[in-house]
Length: 85
Image (cartoon, rainbow, N blue to C red):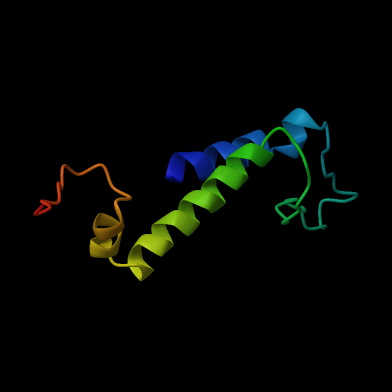
């Protein structure tokens, strides 16, 4: 998960991929970092969406108990229910 967020941050670098740089007019000015949140469509957008979906799935696993998934058959465990006929 950490590497997906890091990949998003690297692929969303405006200086490398969009040729955007911030400059200072004088040496006493503060340098703008350009690290602002922009929701735009770029080559890094799929990584962000995968990260957000993974966080949603992980948070749902804390909210919904694991026994519920086993009971409903949403797991890959070899839990075979015996049926008396």
